[in-house]
Image 1: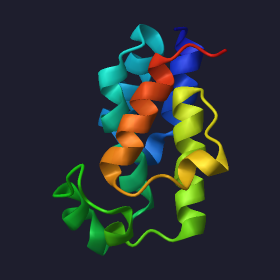
Image 2 (image 1 turned 90 degrees about the horizontal axis):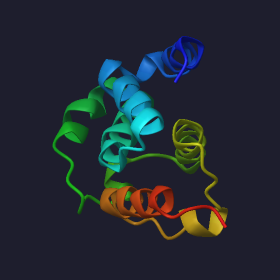
Image 3 (image 1 turned 90 degrees about the vertical axis):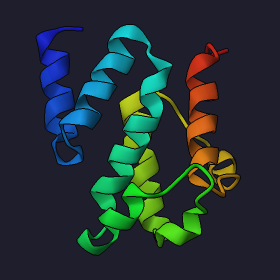
Image 4 (image 1 turned 30 degrees about the vertical axis):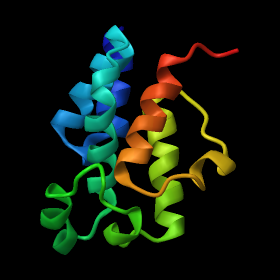
Length: 117
């Protein structure tokens, strides 16, 4: 990755925190699929109101997305950021299948591990 690409990631994801930025760089540079959960959680955390951040820190893969109290428009914004971070496209029909935080993470790990057709 070039310094310019890293600078663009730092600018675009600055509100997600350093850990998320480092995970995006690691994913793009090394194709490190293990970075996906860190990226997803960091992007979601960015959109949560302050009073929900602590509860989100305790969320597990089994946590229903509904428990996170994320409105559908906010979920769309989250998915747009995830697509940008991972350089992928997520179809609306695929998003409708997400029921838990783990569903999202597992889907994305499979999606990035499968070469584009």
